[in-house]
Image (tube, rainbow, N blue to C red; front, side):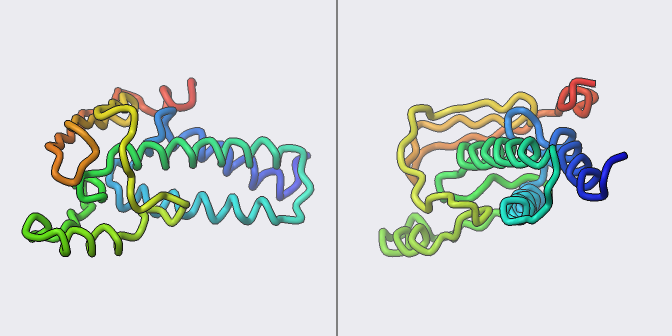
Length: 172
């Protein structure tokens, strides 16, 4: 018979496997929910890392949590807009100042004060990456950009997600 702690860990493991796609996206498409979920996963992971729980599956749960959180963080980093935010999806608001083009002072203040999305060690300045465009087919997010500069043309697309996404995520 499983202990209470093992049941909790198994439930968390199943939640991670069934709600986070292999490309880092969550079943909920709106980024304001995604950010909150990433913060909560990080908090649970911190708790597991300092927990006195002695369970045979804690290492497996910690590994999966780390992997899923890393995938999600990389996806959000890849989707950043030229203004260092995330694209508008669902109820996630666009937060760039309307006058960012008017002066370098406004731009510098904006980027210097920008807080990271998930509070999970994401750099404020994304800098240049080896890629400019990327697709997340399971999450159905697609980005095209010329470069990683603040004034780069940027196109974000969201497609319908594959039918029966839970089956795709869990393999069942």
